[in-house]
Amino acid sequence: MRWPAVAKILLLALFLFSAPAQAGDPAGRWALRVGGRTLILLELERAPGGAWSGRLLRPQHMHASQFLIFSGVEGPVVTRTVKGTEQPGGTIRLAATGSTPDDTDAYLFRVLEAGTGELALADVPPGIHFPAMTLARARAGEAVAESWDPYQSYAIDIDRPSNPEMKAMFDADQAARSDPTKIDWRVLGPQDEARRLRTLQLLQSGALNSGADFYHAAFIFQHGGKPDDYLLAHTLAVAAVTRGRPDGAWIAAATLDRYLQNIGQKQIYGTQFTTPPGGRTTQDPYDPKLIPDSLREALGVPPLADQERQRAEFEAQERAMGAAPASRRSASPKPVSRRARSEH
Image (tube, rainbow, N blue to C red; front, side):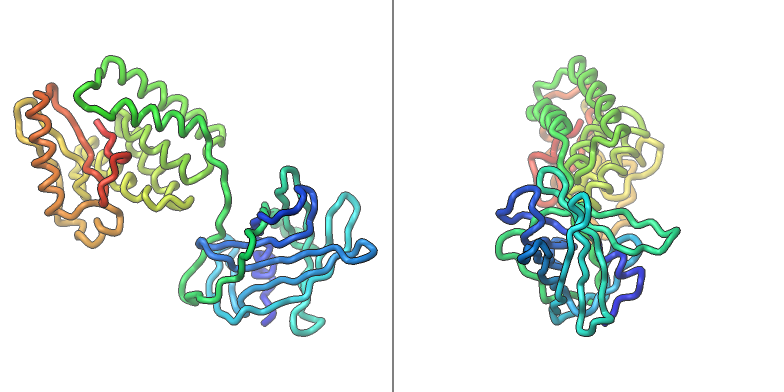
């Protein structure tokens, strides 16, 4: 089936590499992955005389949106013949031919530094701009997946490197809260503020890109002191989920709860617990009826029955520590993760 023009343009999407070839050598296998699965494989080899040949394998049917979201994906896997000629500057012009000579798509491919590369549509009509896509090498033995849900949409997987400084700040944030009985807020408060300021600098400069980056940044701002900190933390957590960190769903719920309570509204998931000096640990203000347990489960938030057990556990801990002034905690995600239980 011949793709519509927009879909053909979007087929260019990202091809991820990883074969044993030299960094600047286009030869090898390249894979487009969506939703954690391989959608397309491009195989290239240099023919005698310097020409290029190979194959492009993909499911027979698919549709692509302008946001590089694939839907209507159905098999079987079909193979298209690829022929290419090298252009000035090392760019290769590729023609992928389907079942008939008229069913041909043209692409431009080149290898960038460190083994990465980019693929762009050739012969784009004037006035239409489609950016080239970053490529990386396919894994050994990788094959096009055969079982797809035609009613599901699949987003392109992009390999975004994580920021080591962001990870180091997250680790420091967690380490400072490893033992709540030894926290000195006169020391930790300024440290938290410094981490928030630096995280904001990294965010505004575009230095945070991966799901892990946004996940770590969400925890930094979860430990803020004003509503805007919690609202930014919530947005960072949502970004973490969209960038491949599904465990960011819990921190997204917790940060929204904390934001709501700090603007005088009721929390809705039940992640926030407060213990006044000498008082009873409570989740109030809280509307436990708005969100069903099935939705809490989807977000990694404990159901109401487990929340009550956590409330009693926190209350017992606070009494043992003789905590004063009032302390705040966020419920652990489900299943319980020590890493995520780092809250004040």
